[in-house]
Amino acid sequence: MAGEKAVSETVLVVGGGMSGVTAAVEIAEVGYDVIIVEKRPYLGGRVVQLYQYFPKLCPPLCGMEINYRRIKSNPRIKVFTLAEVQGISGQEGNFDVTIKINPRYVNTNCTACGKCVDACPIERPSEFDYGLGNTKAIYLPYEMSFPMKYVIDDKYCDKCGKCVEACPYNAIDLNEAPKDFTVKVASIVWATGWRPYDATKMDNLGFGQYKNVITNVMMERLAAPNGPTKGKIVRPSDNGSIESVAFVQCAGSRDENHLPFCSAICCLASMKQATYVREQYPTAKIYIFYIDLRPFGRFEEFYNRVKQDENVFFIKGKVAKVTENPNTKKITVEAEDILSGVKTRKEVDLVVLATGMEPTTRGEKLPFEAMCDDLGFLVSDLQRPGIYPAGCVRMPMDVMTCVKDATAAALKAIQSIVRR
Image (cartoon, rainbow, N blue to C red; front, side, top):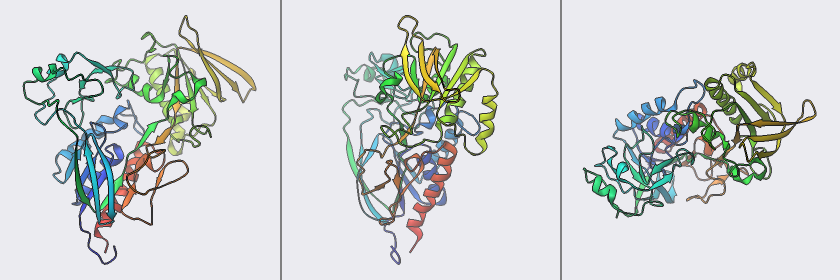
């Protein structure tokens, strides 16, 4: 591109989670047009599914609401949800990108009044709550959803038309079809994030077999006030109270048969969730089974605070087996305590598996020639400048680090426009 003017001065941001939203607002507020493409029906990614996040242990919607306001007030940002990139051609300064928008079946007339939900006779498992709760086939993803519009899940909707009859604003079109369009952009920020590792792949840990074995992301939804239990942490089998919880670290991580790397944040996430339980159940016993504890940087202090809790017990040992008492639905966790050399068995009400962060690029075909490392994370391709990874698609990160990384990617995307 040296000596050649960029054909476009627009940046495409693929992914509308914390990294993508951060990159988009930073670029737009410098003065360049931005297009956000997000495959979910809402912005916010996995961050908005959390109850609290580091470093302040505050609800994520506080920070996201500020970003949503920045997006709404900036005419340089265009947002396309339920959208996917189908193909990318061209070069830095002159990319042609084909985007497919899947039908929402709800248009801009929607006021989020909720009358459609009252009329809908069909329920579906809520992916926002990781299957712990249900919604109707037409639903609002969450209470501060952006865009603030309902959406229909066509995998469950039978097109009965009752929502159409109930809607007073003519906002529902059950015949809406997918559509494709092409945009020209100067650079691309790829911020498609991560997914929780599939815990059903670990037969010995009981996920999918026993209701009272859940994952760490599911625990966030149980603790969240907008979750399926309104923030009450309960046993999924009977909604009963909790007297003991076992956290199983490295569930599939640091394992050549699953994820051969450390996701860096799981230890802290489990300790954070231990505080959730202790706040609701002052006498509950917490057992944290770990291989190594890795509270990085200033979070060492947080680890020390949790460790001082007389009801939190750290057991150094990899969990070998998880079984259920069919009568009580209590779960027994078996492991060898490496420090004492003694096999230990703990019967608990709930088991939480700390599954790792798997990049969305792992095992997926991308719409451009990309370089991924042997772990599946996207790396910058210096042979083809103009496409910049950001956030957890590049390496495991906490939310604060994602914001910094996305800001750096935004700067690189801007440089693709201004350099000559």
